[in-house]
Every structure is written in structure tokens, then in C-alpha cells.
Image (cartoon, rainbow, N blue to C red; front, side, top):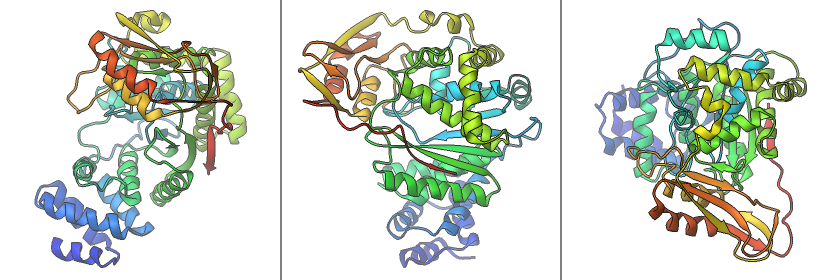
Amino acid sequence: MATMIEIIEKKQRGAALDEAEIAEFVGSYTNGSVPDYQAAALLMAIYFKGMSREETVMLTRAMARSGDMIDLGAIEGVKVDKHSTGGVGDKTTLILSPLVAACGGKVAKMSGRGLGHTGGTIDKLEAIPGFRTTMESGEFFAIVNCVGAAILGATGNIAPADKKIYALRDVTATVASLPLVASSVMSKKLASGADAIVLDVKCGSGAFMKTVEEARELSRLMIDIGRAEGRKMAAFITDMDVPLGCAIGNALEVREAVETLQGRGPADLTEICVLLSGAMLHLAGMGPASVCEERARRAIADGSGFQKFRQMVEAQGGDVSAIDDTAKLVGAPLEKTVRAAQTGCIVHIDAERCGVASMLLGAGRRVKDDRLDYCAGIMLEAKTGDKVVAGQPIARLYATNGALFAAAEAELAGAYCYGAAPPPAIPLVLDRIF
């Protein structure tokens, strides 16, 4: 068995590690017998020398098997999941899960919390009074079998190797490595047990991947990993140069998700959710993607998607009256209007700065132990391509603590760029990989 020093030196030379060496590193680092400084040395070598497709598959497999491997066999049918690489205003899981369920699919989803400027699905759901994001597996399976969808927080023992490795990457400047990003995402997806996975890889100023080329390479790598482990896979590369929809912040995003399921949501958010739902249904064997997309549109139009969301909320202990009347969710005591700095067209909105502004209001976490203000956030009233006049409202800020408005307003105002003419339109979907 190779020692850690030998494994580090091998990767420093640019040589490929074998499965035993990768398994030794992952297992020993997870159980604490390999110290952080040796793990950091190997991560840095991977950052500079890279990994082959085969190595990345083996790393992902070892990370997935470092903890619990969820068996979803008690749920009938094909279990389909969606993963987003994170973005600002991304509440798609709240919409597409009930849409897929309304069309006969099964979504047994485990999601995470937000950190920094990207929001977490579990945080959004916990803005609904009483909503339970933890429960025993038997109850979880029963809800999915009955309703068609349920969403829980990831358990503490899903891919524990990823938790340790990710924390180390964050403090050693090795986050931006495609093999490490892909293995981090896919180890959790493989351990969560779904038969089919649709990836929503965000690209742009509010995303980790800034260019289409980077996003395409990451997508193909994650698809290769999933298929090597017997999963059905598809990926969309979607624009995150602009926040998705108009709401940023937990309760505000729940309200916007409800409005979208009722056919009253923003066009960009609705379209992305229809496309992702269609791909999920297609991978579940329910027909061509175009036919499945139309089924998702009908589930919005006839209200069946909204009814599934109500059923899911009720089954998970949430207060359904707060879904029927979302004013119960979004009652922030304080509001401040942000106005256009000049007359002209909005040519760009920096999505990341919008996310930071929302975090400054209390809707996100600077560190993982920060408490959230579920009512805090931002409603955008003007987006890229809109014509505005100086002094016109372009956004509204919501908070419980008025002292937070100044910093958030400055950050949000700096996110807007103005020009004389509208910019060229950027498509919502930049690429599809099936």
C-alpha cells in the first residue's frame, strides 16, 4: 500500500493515481489518520496537475462511499433528481419538484443550506412555518410514494469525505479545480440514490463557472461520472449573469415559486423550470423531452403542480395556509426603495452583487452559524434590457433591522450598469447536453 508521501509525489509528477491510492487517501483522510497538511498537499498537486476522467470517477466513487449510500428501492418507479451549481434567486427546486410529481415522476430530493451569496433550498423551505426538513427514511419514502415529491436536508453522513475535503479546499485556494468540483457535486448525488440526474450548471457573474466553455467542460465531466456509475444523466448550461426571477431571499422566493406554479411567475423562471422538468420526466422514461416539457406547462396551467406543492408542504408539516396566502410569509417590517441612478437602459446586473446585498440584509450567511432573517431580501423591479428614468424604483429591500439597509443599498446600486441602448439578448439556456 502506497504511503501518503508517495501518493503526493506521484501526483506532483503528473502521473495518474490508481483506485487503491485514491481509496487510501479518501478513507484515511475521512477517518483522521491523514493530517490536513498532507491532504492539502495532494489537493494542491491535483489543482496544478489535474486528473484524468478515470481518476475523477474513482475519486467520486470513493467519496460517495465514505458514508451512507441511500437506497431508494422502497420508492416506486424511476427516482429523478436535479442539481444546480448555485445561483442568485434560484428557487427552481421548489417549482420543478411538484411539477414533475404532478406529471407522474418521483422526486426524492436531498438539498443543502446556503452559504455566502447563494441561497439554499432548505433555508427557503424552512421559511414556511412548521415545514420539516428532517424525518425518518420510512416516512420520507412514504411521502414520495404518496405525493410524488419530498425534499429533505442532506444527512450528516452523506459523503463525509466531501465535507472534509471541501472545507480544506476553501482555505487552501484549491476550490477552482474541475475534478474537485465535479467529484464534490457528484459524490453527494450518487450517495443520495437517484436513478437519473439533471444538472443545471450556472454560468455568468453570479455563478462559479464564469464562461460557457468552463461550464460545458464541468457538465461533460459530471455526466461522464454519473454514467460510469449507471445513472441516466443530462445537463443544461443556464445563464446567471442576471438573477433568476425577481425575488432574492428565502420567504420572497417561496412566494415567487408559488406564483410561478400558479402561472403568474416571471417568464425566465417559468421557462427554466419547464425545461428542467421536461428533462427530468424524459430521463424517467415518460417520453421525448419536448412532449415532457408540454406536460410540465400543462401542470402549471391546470393548477396540478401547485396542488402537488400544497400536498408536499402539508405532508412535511408545513402551514398550508401560508402557501394559500403568502402574505403570511413575507411580512418584513421594514422596506427601502432603490432608485435608478440615471436615465437609460440597464445593460447589465451583477448577479453576485445582488446576492451579496441580500446576504447583507440577513437573508444569507457570511459563516455557516449565522442566523437567517427569513423575511429579508430583495425584489427586483427592473432587470437587464429595461428602460428606466433617473429616480425610478428598480428594486425594493426588505429587512427587520433598518441599520442593514445602507450597506445593502450601496452593494445593490453598484450591481446595475446603464447605457444608451439595450444589450444583445442572452439566451436563458446556453447549451444542452443529453
